[in-house]
Image (cartoon, rainbow over all chains, first blue to last red; front, side, top):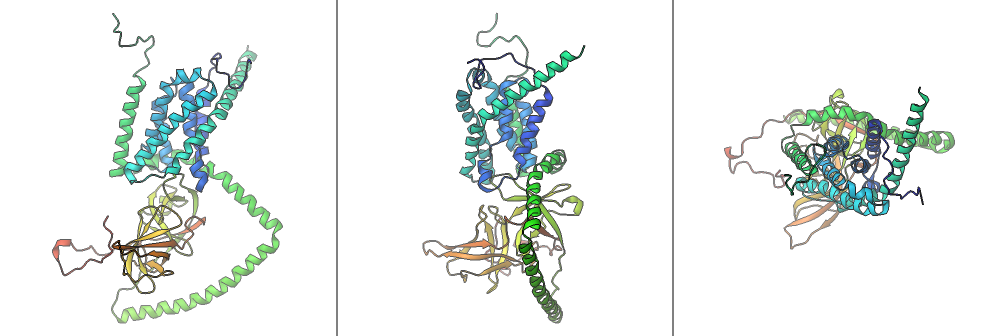
Length: 179
Length: 306
């Protein structure tokens, strides 16, 4: 079982370009911005949180709490929520990712999923808590989002892993071609 | 000697995650406090919104494309229905035009009567058409963004309606967009009047698009199912006489001091793409201070206390 998808043995870490990370987060912001409505809005996974958590886990020294916070500020502007609401939630998320990154990397994807679920619940709770403090009520269906986000964790990890491989392969070939 | 409680570090990587978390949490809480209490950060927000608007614009593309495709197939295949619709529109237009003429005559008459009775004239309001760019992606709130912003002289507090009734109010203005809060937003208040008997009251949003609430209505209040609620124009923000909602259910329980009155918004609060932004009303004269004339000035019963 050398290269199954749920393989967790640390392969040789390939370099990831900053551009790829930035693009993935911008894409996530774009996906969050699609016109979700009604029940679909409740079920919408938080793509930005997914992408941030992935990078916090795999590249904790490049995407950390500070950058997550900054992305959160942009998410606040995009969603017209209060300044700092998403930022706070994403800081909590990044903290979870950074602190647990060694443990999570030892796990296979199935085990990761259960851990990731906990982090997402905390993130969503931070967001809802702020909303409750400011507006005095909480829509419980909102927490459906952390379940769908968790379900997306495995496919997204596999996809990012594959894309990182393709990216670095073509990069290497490019480098070899040059004299 | 290395202190055993402190883990030894080979590489200096700045403060630990916990310290960072505390720092950024504090920063977020500070921002939250400033934003929720004082609203000092609106200019920062509009500056950042310019940065992020390309992504948002891009995100509306799939929906727009979907609609265009739908439109294309309607014009291609369903010729009959389109012709039918055209025919219906024309009939409606003729009908409306006749009514409009009548209304103009009545307006003139009203003007003259008001002149005779020495009442101030009703203010005319102008409107500009705007299109919904996207619905807010915040689960908790009912907001939409429209494609007219500071560039089209949209101001905070202007009223937004569709062809049937009030939709909401402008609550934030960006350079190219503005944010409309729906009347169905929780605790959003609209001063209204029952059309049948002129009873003044205040209509509150319930946080759900399907209904609105009349709070603080005495059990004995003269409200019936099917009553039409129109804006009263008392606050000087909403122009008077625009339909807002219809009463659908009344629960009168003598155990409680107030009746629970459920209303249905008339306007397609979550349906349309095109909306009208009304120009703001001229300022009313200052309200006299409370303490100046106790007893002589009786406050209307249902005034909201915010």
